[in-house]
Amino acid sequence: MTREVKSTAVAPPPAGVPRLSDIGLQNFAPYLMNRIMGRYNASLREEMAALGLTTAKMRTLAVLSVIDGLQISRLAVYAVIETSTLSRALDALESEGLVRREADASDSRASRVAITRAGRAAFDRLWPAMAQSYARMFAGIPESERQAFVATLQKILANIRKHDF
Image (cartoon, rainbow, N blue to C red; front, side, top):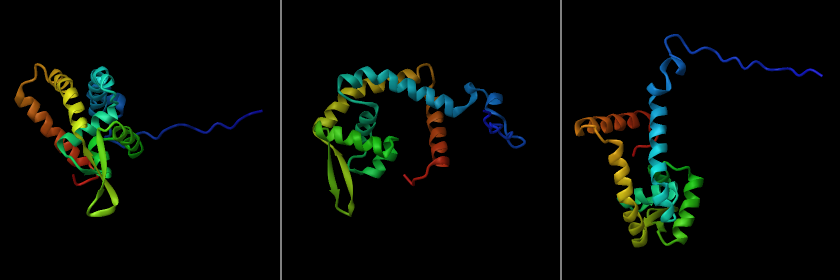
């Protein structure tokens, strides 16, 4: 019995567009950003686990510690979490007394999420580890370079974002 095998040949990139193998992983910004964030999150796992937090819970509390009372759809964007994952994280955070959901006064279909005093305290316990990991990322990098890097990241985000916030 013979099976027909479909060709998996991929068309070459358009003229002038380099292949990833030409660029190299060490020169491909999305790869580097993923590596950096993976390492950053890994550096916090032990501290998060001690507080009963996951990366999704940590991101949620971090965002709410700065911008409290967000609609869930906006919180998902700011926290960079899929809506289904955020929903599970919010269920857990709410049952742990770290956040509370409130009806949105201006939109009866929406809910807002507020950080509780206990949630703020949990985040405040995690913040020193987050700040230390952040400082370690920029060790040996002059402040002017850090500021330029962050400004570049903000421009990149503006180029690719789907939301006006």
